[in-house]
Length: 406
Image 1 (cartoon, rainbow, N blue to C red):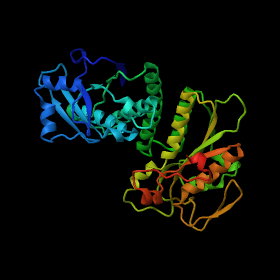
Image 2 (image 1 turned 90 degrees about the horizontal axis):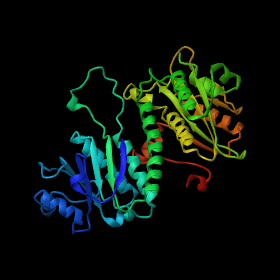
Image 3 (image 1 turned 135 degrees about the vertical axis):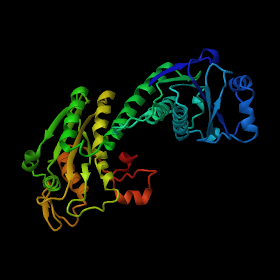
Image 4 (image 1 turned 180 degrees about the horizontal axis):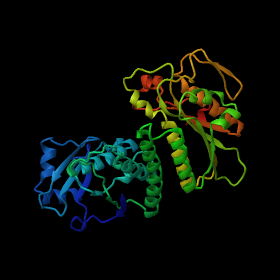
């Protein structure tokens, strides 16, 4: 998506097919530029407001067809909610709604008029813009379609390819910095989503490691691929135990970024990489087992976090440990009642082979400690107890250092 900044709203010179702008719920008087637009489209905005067909609450929007009364085809009228509650979450909602409605009417260019940047509560213009753009890119992303049959062109989801932000409150340097960081963050998130959505027969531990090799080569990240024999040599008994039941043998990735000038102690990122989790001998129910291809989301998040770190040129030393396995039943698979010795030397009795995540993460954490990590961030995935506690609206974070957690 091409993104640009302009000031001095002049409707006749805006080439976008869609105009987007918003209103605050607790302000009755229309901004002057909205009054001008309203007068040109036969007071349609005033009508919608007076009849309460549209109430500018956060998350609300309506599409208005201009019928040739403006150079643009459509208006997306947005609700900002109350000004006193206009925070980063409100910005996310507005940004997502702009893309959603522009896609809905099958248009590819949109101009957002008068972003109320100085009204954002408790955050800097940089944070507000970064949040807005990051959401814009996330909502504009289209997951890869693996279907062989091609849909009718009208049914295909499109992407917005041109976005113009009009604001008199925005410094160009702040705009460019926020846009750059937002692109890096959103790109990492979108690539993670694509990996998580990939079928497990397309993304085995070996294929994941090959993709990581390409990414690290392009990003100036150091990569070490630890194969099955090396895993055994290093006595990573938990990773070896979980992965040995699959024809797709386990792999461990070590990715390094040395951005600090001094030899300061590094931070470690660890991502759970179960590219498919059948449960092993403790086989899962068949219902929703197809979703177990997603059990490598932690690994994908860490891989693309490292790519983002390199693009940001972070002035810290960071490394990632990514254990990659398939948890499958077979004649050689780990069995309930078996005992494995982890890299730390501790032995573990296997009660359920479907508790594989904690096993591979145990070895990965031990390895990170041996490599001298001062702080460790461990990204698990598909943790059932977390869903029970928090649903799908929040992620859990648990740690032993409150300052680090914050």
